[in-house]
Amino acid sequence: MMNFGSRPFILHAAAACLLAAVSPAQTVPCGAGTGSPPHPAAKSAGEDAPLFTLPEDAALQEFAASPDLLHWALVYAGRKVNAHLEGKPETLKANATVVHDATVVGSYPDVAPFSLRLSEGGTSVAFTVVKWRSWTVPLYWVVRNGTRFTGSGTYTEEVEFHELGHPWLSPDGSRVAYLLVLKGKRRVMVDETAVFTSKDARLERPWSPDGKQVTLIARKDGEDKLVVDGKTLASAADIRLLRAPSTYIASSGGEDALIVDGKPCARHAEILGAVFSMSGDRIALSVRDDGGRAGVVLLDESCKAVGTWGEDEWTDILSIRLSDDGRHLFYAARTTSGTLAASLEGPVILGCGSDIDFDSVAISSGPPKAAAWTVPEAGGQVLCVNGKPSGRWDRIELPLVFSAGGSKVLFHAWKDDVLFLAVAPL
Image 1 (cartoon, rainbow, N blue to C red):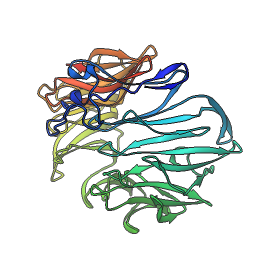
Image 2: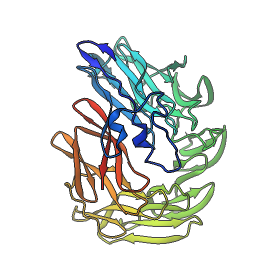
Image 3: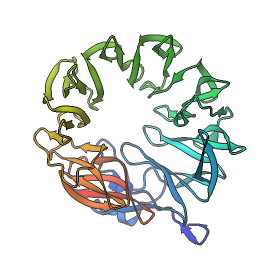
Image 4: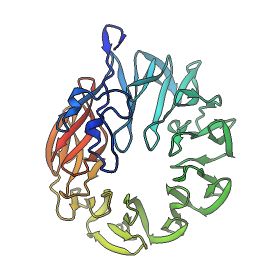
């Protein structure tokens, strides 16, 4: 236990035994990944396990967790400082501390870490640190696993603030890609090396699965250019990268095309979004036709449509989700009357209130077949499982994860400034 002021700063051991139930492919002994035995509450997969307690008067700034929930990171801050963002005065929490798996990575006085990211395996953490020079013009730099990269960028009104130094870790966490803005130009950096320079460039999920290639999108002559290792692979009026290096949505000539691994897969008047099953043999698209009607299309590995859903009164698709094995599809649509239509291979009673956080929706591979999501309620959040409330928390963190047997939902959540690994049975 370390003391920070009058209130103890408690680092609870991670609940590895409980987490081992998330994936049958992972054999996780008690205490694996933390170097310490699990907290006593973790010995039962049916109990919530405390992991961490915020110090007194601290405020949580950001939280991130690995997809399997085995690793997590957070930023909390203490006293306030005054700054100017985009010419407007704003009060920010400073004296920030970054914690990764119950270990303090670093403390940063009078600065504001943001854009907290974990690698796919959760073993590496990256974030951006912003410091205000004369309290008007901020400088920023990127930190990976406690190592600060010497390059710094300067915020200008031409760059949206959230883009500054936004870090993207390679799959193994050994490298980080980010955007550096200097003298009006954007440099795409990998650690300390500039790999591309453009007046208008952006990063969206830039790393290839093997971590060997960096993909970026550069704007030139009124078009987006998909650039991989310095070479232009495709051009379109607008490109949305879904999976590096060559799976994306391209907009041109009044229609959208889904390109998978560099090959045309589907075309629609408008493709709102796409999700892929972990098994790789299913793709779900949310689409809209020329008449403004929205719908959902399910494709197989050959890009053949194996299912379509839609009604004349549907105006927007709020959420689509595929189970890991691609067998179950969840969608929620907005109708002309403002009501919701949702399905998980049959009608779903949304329940728990209508103000659903659709980014939080998770579905099981089953059996049993199940869906879970969060709903705000009276200063906190409620977990909703199959339309029924399953516990209230001050704050619920994403993702929600179903256990291997599908009988429980696991997630991180806060209550009275204590972070828990929480368990909700179906």
